[in-house]
Image 1 (cartoon, helix red, strand yellow):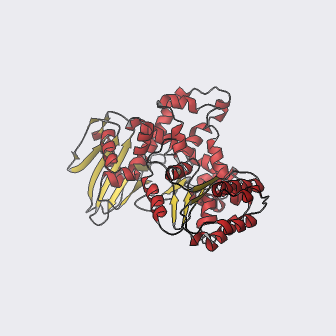
Image 2 (image 1 turned 45 degrees about the vertical axis):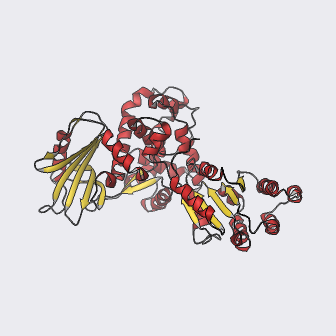
Length: 466
């Protein structure tokens, strides 16, 4: 796999390595995010390391494999040939042979599999750290994919290992400019791929150079991605039926709790714990209007999961029968990418236009309008409370956009937003692939137009944030 970005994470690891005392580093993040690849990059020029990649197998086999790794590193024939069946005995032997003044790296990757088979494993490791490793120059790295388990068993207050770590790294997805670099594609195509796959390195590695060709391969029952959404959830969650139904409901547009409850058949008061878990994993996000009080809306936050539920899971029967015509989904997929383009602009708004303290979406009801026509929605509203400045923004995943037409619509919607009406200073922004007609002002109010070339230039300057 190509290695892109991760400079900050490598700096953390290098700084820990340079310490003349022991280090305990925790690396965690979702499946396929590149944790092992980061570790490989860190150790490739290091002289002394023990790397153990745990597997989901019987505990006795896990002990045997780690035992052999350690024995080979220390050239310890006695350890290599011993028949050890429990962790306590294994760590007791390590206490006798572990070097006190040698700088070496000890890596336990996929830590979650060890805990899965023996919930007491963190206690054994904690004892080994407290009595031996903490007094040496060893750099202990523990890495795992099951985010909830890593937080609970390593980082949380209830873990035996709590308070021991010297650094922790939550490995996140690649940013949009790194996606572009990884795939060596245009900025427009980078947005398309990011909308479908997020910034997950393993997914990007499997992408074709042509987005259209990739979509054709994506909708195949032989595709790597066909069951990936299901695998991603089963690794993090137990009894996933309700979680699957909730995410399916969100994908179909049931974004309020009462709507989700009706769709899933789960009582409203019982659905919140499921939402909280999905939020903690980064699978779901909540949105509230920037101004006023409205019911909270919930959305699938993970780009790949969102696409998987909207398309792969939705059309799985046709995929199984090899009868899906991908060309007929073109408009639907384009609309999906449009929503992700809006999210990209909103998340990085502070980089695009500075001076606003609050940024988000705005929606509400219009008094006096019949049902079905009494709701307005604005993609982006940004506020500077101190200066009473308000900006209204619209995102269009379209080429040759007429900015004047968009701004006229925004002006109408702005009239429904109640916020310092008598004294506020308004401005407008339009984001699009390209413009047929740009605008600098409208009725004396500033207008900002950003096409893909503008955004790419801005994002290049602020690469670390996007």
